[in-house]
Structures are given as structure tokens and as C-alpha cells.
Amino acid sequence: MPSFVHASIYLPHQESSNELIQSLLEGKLVLPAIDLVGKKAAIFSAGILDNFLQEEFLHGNSGLETEYHRPLHSLSSGEQKKALLNHLLFGKADYFLLDELYDHVDHQGQASILATMQMIADSKPVIQLVRRQKDLLPFIQSYFWYQEKQIQTFASAFEFHQYLDAHLAQNSFRPIPRALKTIVAPAGPLVQMKHLCVSYDERPILDSIDWTIETGECWQLMGPNGSGKSTLLSMITGDNPKGYGQELYLFGRKKGTGETVWEIKQYIGYFNPVMIQHFSRLDNIELMIVSGCMDSIGVYIKPSEMQLRLAKEWLDYLGLLSLKNKPIQLLPAAQQRMVLIARAMVKHPPLLILDEPTSGLDDASAALVIGMIEQIRKETKTTVLFVSHQQEKGFEPDRTFELTASATGSTGAAATI
Image (cartoon, rainbow, N blue to C red; front, side, top):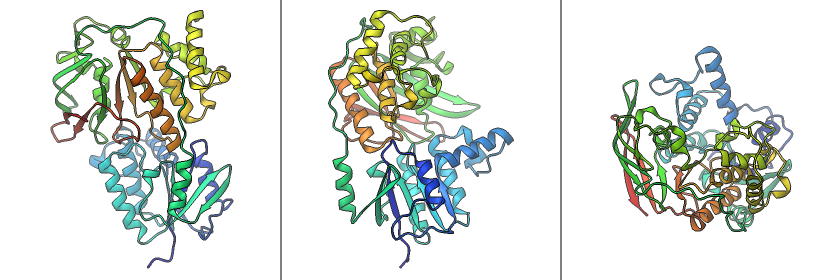
């Protein structure tokens, strides 16, 4: 029997995992009954992965072995994580320190990572930093909560889970604000694809996709890392030139019949967590929501009184009106996501695309975001397309569209829940 202990440390999302990792490595933070002094850690984190990506950018080679020797930056985030873990396996570390092990990783990838970690756990201690209860590794023996540079210890897994459940946020939103004007999509399906195929440099991505999205539906788009979810979304938003010459119909028009990208985008509200990187650090949350009225990144003309009033209504809905002049980067992650979703919804678009809206959030923050999405579904006529490879508690789509990867390109199948 191993003489060491495997531990998990739960972090509410306002806490920095980088700060916690540094405190553990420097011995400033001590875990009861776990001795890390003088021991070398194999660190699995987004920061470490960024270092390899930077190395590839500067010198052309990341130093990580990847499948088919593909560049690291060309892989999905889940595939990048698997490459990093495989690299760490061959190091001479005394223990493994894991941060957000499963974030952005599909079910198949999670199963592969779990099998690897179970093998590692037989010979080396594992410390897992986690923000979602469902991500806890099954062999964990000790449970901690980290907040304000303090560690709280739990006597058992039962006590630990009870404590987390008690801290999940309860949603208490007001009614969804109305749009300034109603955007009505042309009659018929919002999106229709018939035998859609996409390939890049003779590498097939999508193979004969048939998918129709009707007004008022709620879909979840699923599929493993690298299966073409992002490519499929780019076809719907009109950004992908591969749609020309194919049976792709967007809001009543066949792709390539004289429409502009902006004519397509007027019907779409779009959210992705990385969008925040496109905004200036000085953009306050009031103007960010106003920019949704203008379909722009930032505000370059003076907003109208009606637009400012609508932005205030959304901030009041979110409970953030008193912070309207605050830069979004200074908000907690859940509030950042909700501001960006409000920006996407400010027009009440016929189609709202939510690309990984809960990725990287803790349980309480994810519950807040899901609560907002469910309210949008109930109180508006907006069709929702939710993109994630995992099921979220409290979110119940009408239908799913799942991509299945193959050597000839991913195929797709629709199913009713």
C-alpha cells in the first residue's frame, strides 16, 4: 500500500490558482499531513502550457510530442492538455500538481487522462486543484478548501461535498429586459445544412452534415476535441468561405447569393469566453453592453439615450448597476460571462450562440450562468445553441447535435432529449 496521500484543493473562482501553486512550491502554504518540502513537482496547468506555446511561437518547436507531429497551436485545447500530460509522464518529479485537469477536454479525452492519472497515483502523490465537484479524481483521499490564502480541512468526502453544495449560488434574476426593436428572421429554418463537407489542405473536417435549426428550439452542440465544432459554428455565423457553393442556408438565403457577413450577423448573438481579450482593459461594462446594439467591439460613436437606458436595464438585471463604470477585467469570471451574454442578447437576436459559456468556472459560477441561460429560454423567443461536450446541471436542451470524428471527417447526428 502506498504511504502517501492524494489531495484535492477546491478553489472558488475568485481565487488565483497560479498564486496557490506558487505558495505550495515555495512552502508558504502547508497542507496538513502532506510533506512537499524539497520535493519536485510535475505541474499541469494552463500557465505551463502557455510556456510551450510561446516556445513554439518564438522558435518553431514547442518541445511537446503531438499526434502526427502537428504544431501545438493547431490542436484543440483538449488535445494540447493531453500532449502536456504525456510530456510530464517522463519527468523525474516527486509528485503531480494538477490545475483544471479536465477543462475543455471531451469525454473520451477525460477517460484517457483518468486512466493515466490512476497509473500515476499508484506510485506518486497527486494534488488536484479543482473548481467543479464532478472533476474530482476518484482516488482522492484528503479534501481542502482554499480562500483568502487560508486552507480549510475536511474530515471526510461527505463533509466536503456538503460544504460545497451549501455554497452554490441561488439565482434571483429580474425579468429579462426588452429589446429596443424586434429583429424578425425570414420565414423558415434559421439554419439549414444539406450534405455539408469541409476540408483543409486535403484533411477532411466535416463529412456530409445535415442539420436544420428551427425558430424557438434549444440545441446543444457536442463532440470530441478536434471534431469540427468550431468549424461548424463558423459556417453558421457566415465567417467561413468554405460555405460557398454548398447547400447552406442562413436565415432564408443560400450562402453566396449576394448576402454580406453583416446581414447574417444581424440575426445572431454570439458569446465565447475568449471574446473578453478583444476588448480594451478600459472598456467599462455599460459601454460593453451598448456595443451589442452596434454589433461592434467597443463603442466608437456616441450612444443614444435609449441605448444607454437599455444597458442600465441589463446591468440592473444582473445586479451590477452600481459597477457600470468598472472595467470588465476587474469583475469575477461569472459576472464577466453574464455581461458578455447580456451584450449578445441585447437585441434579442433570433439565434444566440453560446460557445463553452461555463468552461473554467467553479460550480457556483456555472450555476449562475446556467440560470441566466434558462431564463433567456423561458422569457424570450430567441433560439439557443449551447456548445459544450459536457452536460451542465440545470440546463436541459430540447435537442442535441453530436459530431463523431472519423478519418473521412466528422459526421453528425441529431437527437431529441
